[in-house]
Length: 183
Length: 103
Image (cartoon, rainbow over all chains, first blue to last red; front, side, top):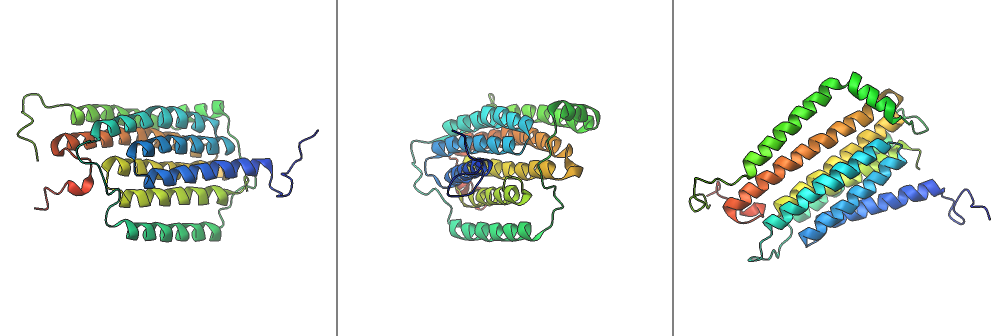
Protein backbone atom coordinates (compact mmCIF):
# COMPACT_ATOMS: atom_id res chain seq x y z
CA UNK A 1 0.00 0.00 0.00
CA UNK A 2 1.36 3.35 -1.04
CA UNK A 3 1.77 6.22 1.36
CA UNK A 4 -0.20 9.24 0.11
CA UNK A 5 1.56 12.50 -0.65
CA UNK A 6 -0.39 14.45 1.88
CA UNK A 7 -1.81 13.46 5.21
CA UNK A 8 -5.41 12.26 4.83
CA UNK A 9 -8.18 14.56 6.09
CA UNK A 10 -5.84 17.46 6.91
CA UNK A 11 -4.09 18.22 3.65
CA UNK A 12 -0.68 18.96 5.14
CA UNK A 13 2.33 17.40 3.54
CA UNK A 14 4.47 15.05 5.61
CA UNK A 15 7.35 17.53 5.57
CA UNK A 16 5.11 20.23 7.00
CA UNK A 17 3.99 17.83 9.70
CA UNK A 18 7.63 17.16 10.58
CA UNK A 19 8.33 20.89 10.70
CA UNK A 20 5.30 21.51 12.90
CA UNK A 21 6.29 18.70 15.25
CA UNK A 22 9.80 20.06 15.66
CA UNK A 23 8.50 23.62 16.05
CA UNK A 24 6.04 22.55 18.74
CA UNK A 25 8.77 20.62 20.54
CA UNK A 26 11.11 23.61 20.29
CA UNK A 27 8.65 26.17 21.61
CA UNK A 28 7.19 23.84 24.24
CA UNK A 29 10.55 22.90 25.71
CA UNK A 30 11.68 26.53 25.44
CA UNK A 31 8.70 27.59 27.51
CA UNK A 32 9.44 24.86 30.02
CA UNK A 33 13.00 26.19 30.32
CA UNK A 34 11.77 29.59 31.44
CA UNK A 35 8.76 28.62 33.59
CA UNK A 36 9.68 25.42 35.39
CA UNK A 37 10.36 25.60 39.10
CA UNK A 38 13.11 23.02 39.41
CA UNK A 39 16.18 24.44 37.73
CA UNK A 40 17.76 21.09 36.95
CA UNK A 41 14.63 20.19 34.97
CA UNK A 42 15.02 23.52 33.18
CA UNK A 43 18.48 22.39 32.14
CA UNK A 44 17.16 19.07 30.84
CA UNK A 45 14.36 20.85 28.93
CA UNK A 46 17.06 23.06 27.40
CA UNK A 47 18.73 19.93 25.99
CA UNK A 48 15.41 18.90 24.38
CA UNK A 49 15.08 22.42 22.99
CA UNK A 50 18.55 22.29 21.41
CA UNK A 51 17.81 18.87 19.94
CA UNK A 52 14.58 20.11 18.35
CA UNK A 53 16.49 23.05 16.90
CA UNK A 54 19.01 20.64 15.39
CA UNK A 55 16.07 18.90 13.72
CA UNK A 56 14.89 22.24 12.31
CA UNK A 57 18.37 22.82 10.92
CA UNK A 58 18.22 19.47 9.16
CA UNK A 59 14.85 20.41 7.67
CA UNK A 60 16.40 23.69 6.53
CA UNK A 61 19.07 21.79 4.64
CA UNK A 62 22.03 22.66 6.87
CA UNK A 63 23.22 19.32 8.23
CA UNK A 64 26.64 20.69 9.20
CA UNK A 65 25.04 23.30 11.44
CA UNK A 66 22.83 20.59 12.93
CA UNK A 67 25.90 18.51 13.71
CA UNK A 68 27.65 21.48 15.29
CA UNK A 69 24.50 22.21 17.28
CA UNK A 70 24.40 18.68 18.67
CA UNK A 71 28.13 18.60 19.40
CA UNK A 72 28.55 22.04 20.91
CA UNK A 73 25.19 22.87 22.47
CA UNK A 74 23.97 19.46 23.59
CA UNK A 75 27.43 18.03 24.14
CA UNK A 76 29.35 20.91 25.67
CA UNK A 77 27.21 23.86 26.75
CA UNK A 78 24.41 21.79 28.30
CA UNK A 79 26.88 19.76 30.33
CA UNK A 80 28.56 22.98 31.46
CA UNK A 81 25.22 24.47 32.49
CA UNK A 82 24.22 21.30 34.35
CA UNK A 83 27.54 21.29 36.21
CA UNK A 84 27.08 24.95 37.15
CA UNK A 85 23.53 24.22 38.38
CA UNK A 86 24.76 21.39 40.56
CA UNK A 87 27.60 23.55 41.92
CA UNK A 88 25.33 26.44 42.86
CA UNK A 89 22.29 24.67 44.27
CA UNK A 90 21.84 25.46 47.93
CA UNK A 91 19.87 23.09 50.09
CA UNK A 92 19.71 25.55 52.98
CA UNK A 93 17.29 27.97 51.40
CA UNK A 94 14.90 26.34 48.97
CA UNK A 95 13.90 28.82 46.36
CA UNK A 96 10.23 29.55 46.79
CA UNK A 97 10.06 32.42 44.37
CA UNK A 98 11.24 31.43 40.95
CA UNK A 99 10.37 34.74 39.32
CA UNK A 100 11.30 38.31 40.06
CA UNK A 101 8.64 40.80 41.02
CA UNK A 102 8.87 42.18 37.50
CA UNK A 103 7.68 38.90 35.95
CA UNK A 104 4.25 40.17 34.88
CA UNK A 105 5.57 43.27 33.06
CA UNK A 106 8.25 41.06 31.52
CA UNK A 107 5.58 38.68 30.21
CA UNK A 108 3.54 41.55 28.78
CA UNK A 109 6.67 42.99 27.16
CA UNK A 110 7.62 39.63 25.67
CA UNK A 111 4.12 39.15 24.20
CA UNK A 112 4.19 42.68 22.73
CA UNK A 113 7.65 42.04 21.28
CA UNK A 114 6.41 38.77 19.75
CA UNK A 115 3.41 40.50 18.19
CA UNK A 116 5.57 43.26 16.72
CA UNK A 117 8.10 40.79 15.33
CA UNK A 118 5.41 38.57 13.79
CA UNK A 119 3.68 41.59 12.21
CA UNK A 120 6.97 42.88 10.80
CA UNK A 121 7.92 39.47 9.45
CA UNK A 122 4.52 39.09 7.81
CA UNK A 123 4.60 42.57 6.30
CA UNK A 124 8.11 42.49 4.86
CA UNK A 125 9.02 41.15 1.45
CA UNK A 126 12.31 39.35 2.04
CA UNK A 127 13.02 38.59 -1.60
CA UNK A 128 13.37 34.96 -0.65
CA UNK A 129 13.65 32.09 -3.04
CA UNK A 130 10.68 29.76 -3.24
CA UNK A 131 12.82 26.70 -2.55
CA UNK A 132 15.42 25.95 0.05
CA UNK A 133 18.93 26.29 -1.29
CA UNK A 134 21.30 23.55 -0.29
CA UNK A 135 25.00 24.06 0.18
CA UNK A 136 27.26 21.04 0.46
CA UNK A 137 29.70 20.51 3.28
CA UNK A 138 32.72 20.40 0.95
CA UNK A 139 31.79 23.72 -0.61
CA UNK A 140 31.17 25.19 2.84
CA UNK A 141 34.59 24.07 4.02
CA UNK A 142 36.22 25.60 0.94
CA UNK A 143 34.54 28.95 1.62
CA UNK A 144 35.27 28.82 5.33
CA UNK A 145 39.00 28.24 4.84
CA UNK A 146 39.41 30.55 1.85
CA UNK A 147 37.16 33.61 2.23
CA UNK A 148 36.51 33.40 5.97
CA UNK A 149 39.94 32.46 7.29
CA UNK A 150 40.32 35.68 9.27
CA UNK A 151 37.03 35.31 11.21
CA UNK A 152 37.91 31.66 11.78
CA UNK A 153 41.24 32.57 13.34
CA UNK A 154 39.70 35.42 15.36
CA UNK A 155 37.19 32.93 16.76
CA UNK A 156 39.98 30.58 17.75
CA UNK A 157 41.77 33.41 19.58
CA UNK A 158 38.46 34.30 21.23
CA UNK A 159 37.98 30.71 22.40
CA UNK A 160 41.50 30.68 23.82
CA UNK A 161 40.76 33.93 25.67
CA UNK A 162 37.49 32.45 26.97
CA UNK A 163 39.28 29.35 28.27
CA UNK A 164 41.93 31.43 30.07
CA UNK A 165 39.31 33.85 31.41
CA UNK A 166 37.08 31.02 32.61
CA UNK A 167 39.92 29.35 34.48
CA UNK A 168 41.05 32.66 35.98
CA UNK A 169 37.54 33.60 37.14
CA UNK A 170 36.56 30.24 38.56
CA UNK A 171 39.79 29.28 40.25
CA UNK A 172 39.94 29.44 43.99
CA UNK A 173 42.18 32.06 45.56
CA UNK A 174 44.55 30.10 47.73
CA UNK A 175 46.49 32.74 49.62
CA UNK A 176 43.58 34.99 50.52
CA UNK A 177 41.35 33.32 53.03
CA UNK A 178 37.72 32.84 52.13
CA UNK A 179 36.56 34.47 55.34
CA UNK A 180 37.66 37.92 54.18
CA UNK A 181 35.74 38.05 50.94
CA UNK A 182 32.40 36.88 52.25
CA UNK A 183 29.97 39.60 51.32
CA UNK B 1 5.05 25.93 5.06
CA UNK B 2 8.38 24.18 4.96
CA UNK B 3 9.35 26.18 1.91
CA UNK B 4 8.47 29.60 3.25
CA UNK B 5 10.98 31.81 5.01
CA UNK B 6 8.27 33.40 7.14
CA UNK B 7 7.55 30.19 9.05
CA UNK B 8 11.14 29.87 10.18
CA UNK B 9 11.41 33.57 11.03
CA UNK B 10 8.23 33.48 13.11
CA UNK B 11 9.50 30.39 14.93
CA UNK B 12 12.75 32.23 15.60
CA UNK B 13 10.92 35.34 16.82
CA UNK B 14 8.79 33.32 19.24
CA UNK B 15 11.82 31.53 20.64
CA UNK B 16 13.59 34.88 21.04
CA UNK B 17 10.62 36.28 22.97
CA UNK B 18 10.56 33.24 25.26
CA UNK B 19 14.24 33.87 25.95
CA UNK B 20 13.58 37.56 26.60
CA UNK B 21 10.86 36.73 29.10
CA UNK B 22 13.11 34.24 30.88
CA UNK B 23 15.98 36.68 31.07
CA UNK B 24 13.81 39.42 32.54
CA UNK B 25 11.74 37.28 34.88
CA UNK B 26 13.92 34.59 36.40
CA UNK B 27 15.74 35.13 39.67
CA UNK B 28 18.42 32.51 39.27
CA UNK B 29 21.56 33.68 37.45
CA UNK B 30 21.96 30.34 35.67
CA UNK B 31 18.36 30.49 34.48
CA UNK B 32 19.15 33.89 33.02
CA UNK B 33 22.17 32.43 31.24
CA UNK B 34 20.01 29.61 29.86
CA UNK B 35 17.54 32.22 28.58
CA UNK B 36 20.43 33.98 26.83
CA UNK B 37 21.33 30.68 25.19
CA UNK B 38 17.73 30.39 23.96
CA UNK B 39 17.95 33.88 22.46
CA UNK B 40 21.27 33.09 20.77
CA UNK B 41 19.73 29.94 19.33
CA UNK B 42 16.78 31.92 18.01
CA UNK B 43 19.06 34.38 16.25
CA UNK B 44 21.07 31.50 14.85
CA UNK B 45 17.90 29.94 13.46
CA UNK B 46 17.05 33.23 11.75
CA UNK B 47 20.55 33.43 10.24
CA UNK B 48 20.44 29.87 8.92
CA UNK B 49 16.94 30.46 7.53
CA UNK B 50 18.10 33.56 5.67
CA UNK B 51 21.07 31.61 4.36
CA UNK B 52 18.81 28.82 3.16
CA UNK B 53 16.36 31.08 1.35
CA UNK B 54 18.35 34.07 0.11
CA UNK B 55 20.61 33.31 -2.86
CA UNK B 56 22.99 36.11 -1.91
CA UNK B 57 23.56 34.65 1.55
CA UNK B 58 23.70 31.02 0.52
CA UNK B 59 27.18 30.29 1.82
CA UNK B 60 27.58 33.07 4.36
CA UNK B 61 24.54 32.06 6.42
CA UNK B 62 25.94 28.72 7.50
CA UNK B 63 29.36 30.18 8.24
CA UNK B 64 27.99 33.03 10.32
CA UNK B 65 25.90 30.48 12.22
CA UNK B 66 28.97 28.36 12.93
CA UNK B 67 30.86 31.40 14.21
CA UNK B 68 27.90 32.40 16.40
CA UNK B 69 27.85 28.89 17.90
CA UNK B 70 31.57 29.16 18.73
CA UNK B 71 31.13 32.61 20.29
CA UNK B 72 28.16 31.29 22.29
CA UNK B 73 30.38 28.54 23.66
CA UNK B 74 32.89 31.16 24.84
CA UNK B 75 30.09 33.25 26.32
CA UNK B 76 28.71 30.29 28.25
CA UNK B 77 32.16 29.47 29.61
CA UNK B 78 32.89 32.96 30.88
CA UNK B 79 29.33 33.59 32.08
CA UNK B 80 29.15 30.42 34.14
CA UNK B 81 32.62 31.07 35.55
CA UNK B 82 31.45 34.51 36.67
CA UNK B 83 28.32 33.01 38.24
CA UNK B 84 30.38 30.42 40.12
CA UNK B 85 32.83 33.10 41.29
CA UNK B 86 29.98 35.26 42.60
CA UNK B 87 28.35 32.22 44.19
CA UNK B 88 31.57 31.49 46.06
CA UNK B 89 31.49 34.97 47.57
CA UNK B 90 27.80 35.47 48.21
CA UNK B 91 26.55 31.87 48.71
CA UNK B 92 23.47 32.41 46.57
CA UNK B 93 22.72 32.14 42.87
CA UNK B 94 19.81 34.58 43.06
CA UNK B 95 20.53 37.85 41.30
CA UNK B 96 18.25 40.03 43.44
CA UNK B 97 20.38 39.25 46.47
CA UNK B 98 23.48 40.70 44.82
CA UNK B 99 22.76 44.09 46.34
CA UNK B 100 26.11 44.99 47.88
CA UNK B 101 26.43 48.12 45.77
CA UNK B 102 22.96 49.37 46.63
CA UNK B 103 23.54 49.84 50.34
